[in-house]
Image 1: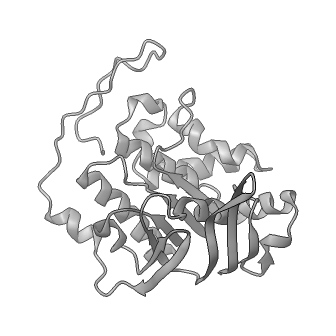
Image 2 (image 1 turned 180 degrees about the vertical axis):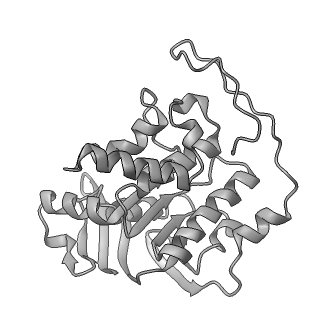
Length: 266
């Protein structure tokens, strides 16, 4: 699925050279759920950006399925990225001037997908993520959990085989973090999507099946999770969420003065 051999990335400062990644070797199989941990500056996010093909200034070999990414042109890397990879960020990266529907539809607009097919795909994922009622709202009218749910839906709209998530629960409260992890676990277990997730929290990391630890740009440990946490069971054990929710007003948006309906998800 993913095979990395001697991946390195460095920056030059005059005559000196600083390595961000040093001789990273790893294999990630289809259906793995890998949590990546390590202190800040260890190279975790850099690795994720290389895997997501957002960074091309590195050396080594990167194989995705049978494609040698290290040998591909920028155009071919872009094709491979659109075909296989969905990216989820800590800060959501939704476009503030687009509605929920438009944000999710955006990746399809860059592909040759007919309008009727696009509408069907977006409608299906809105329903699957229980955000149909939010489709005409703007990001600033949503809670953090709702924005992350939209971001995950957008990452999945192209039906990727891999989800790369850079601290997706970093800005969320405990319940909402577990809700997000429940989504990732279901995608992994029910649809076989490979998940690679960066986190600083062991409670989050243990929702995966494997933990890779980085320090100073190197892999220092790679082991299976002995007892995997079940997000669904954790949610069931929590007290009911606060049902009262208010959408903050916005002078830029005519919808913003309307309160959210009771019982909306976080």
